[in-house]
Amino acid sequence: MPLDQMNVDDWELDENGRPQPPEDKEMSFVDHLEELRWHVVRSLVAIVLGGIVLFLFRDWYFARVLFGPLKTDFISYEVICELTGGNLCIAPEEDILVQAIGVGEQFITAVKMAFIGGFVIAFPYVFYEFWAFVRPGLYEKEQRATRWVILICSILFFIGISFGFLVVAPFGMYFLTNFTVGGAANIPTMDSVIGYMTMFTLPAAVIFELPVLIYFLARFGLVTAAAMRKYRKHSIIGILILASLMTPPDIVTQILIAVPLYSLYEISIFVAKRAQKEYEEDIGGPIED
Image (cartoon, rainbow, N blue to C red; front, side):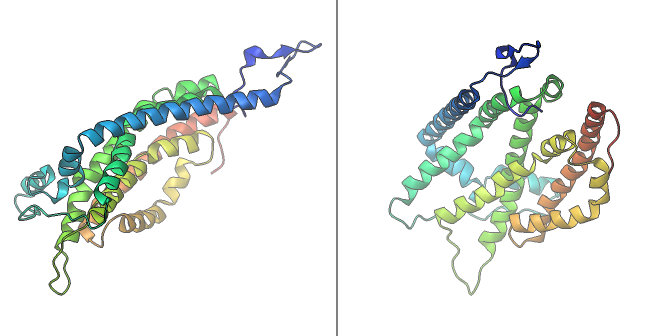
C-alpha cells in the first residue's frame, strides 16, 4: 500500500525521465488534512440529521426501542417462547417502569441517545466517507479486492446491532430486572437502562466486524489461517471471557453471545485463508506460519 495518497498525475519528470513528487510536500500533507476534514464534516452532518429525526420521534424511540425489552409485548419474548415450545417464556408480567431521578436527566439522555442512534442510522454513509479517504491509498488490485467492503461492513454492523437488541438485551434485562436482594423493589433508573442497552448492542455491532478485520490483517500478511486454527482452543477461552464481560452473570446470556462469537471466529478462518492466498500471489510465494 502506498505511504500516502499523492496524485501521481501531478508528479514531474526529472532530467533522466523518472517521475518525481512535487517539491512542496508540506502542502500535499495539508491538502490531505483538508480532505480528511471534509470527510469528517460530512459524516457529522449525517449523524446530526439522523439524531434530529430520532429526537423529534423520541417518545417512540425510547418506548419501543431503548425501553423495548422492558415491555411485555416486546417481539423477542413471543418468538423465544414459541421457538422453545413454551419452555422459555421470559416476558415480564407487566411493563417495567423506568424512573428519572436527576434534574434534566430526561432531556440530556434524549439528546445523547438521539445522536448515538443517529450514528447507527448513518453508519453506512459514515463508513463510506471513511473509506473514500482511505481507498486512494490502496493499489488498484487492493481496491478491486475491497470493492464490496462498504456493503459488507454495513450489513455486519446492522446484524450485530439486531442480535444485541433482539437476543442479548431481552435475556440480559430479564435477568437483571428479576434479580432482587432482601425483597427490595426493582425500579431501574433511566441512566442504568440506557447504559445496559448500549452495552448489549454497540459492542455486538463492533464484534460482528471481526471477519472484515481478519481479512485486512491476512491480506497484509499479519494473520494466517493456519495460526488461527492453531490457537482455536485459546480463542474459545478468550470468547468465553469476552462474553462474560459483555453480559450479566447469567449463563444463558453468556452462551447466547459466545456461540455467535465462535461462529464468527470460524468464518474468519475461512476469510483469512482466502485473503492469505491473495497476499501470497502479490509477494510471489507462500508465507511462513
